[in-house]
Amino acid sequence: MENTQNITEAVNGFVAKNQEVFDAHAQEQLPRLWADGNTTKLEWAMAKKYIKVWTCRQGRRESIHAFIDATTGDVYMPAGLNKPAKHSRGNVFSDRNGAESFNPQNGYINYLR
Image: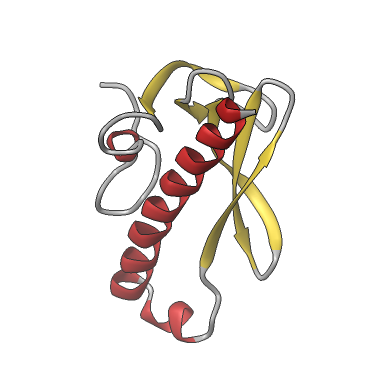
């Protein structure tokens, strides 16, 4: 039970930090859309092995933003709707709460270099 609470807290922290970056990017780069309330919101849902982080607009899920391994907390870029990419980009249990996995300018998950 405690592991579930820990992953829930960590994922909530990851989503909150990522949402802040999304909001700042939208206000700066897309002010008209921001003013109309057409902003991107992040939501997450537990699946079998992974937690899916969704991008949502106007209450509708549009795409998978990230996968998070429910046991290890590793953050993965999506390879498709139901499949993460092979290598993790960060971890929600890290000191930065997974912020190393996304671009600090726009909030999207980093590609491997």
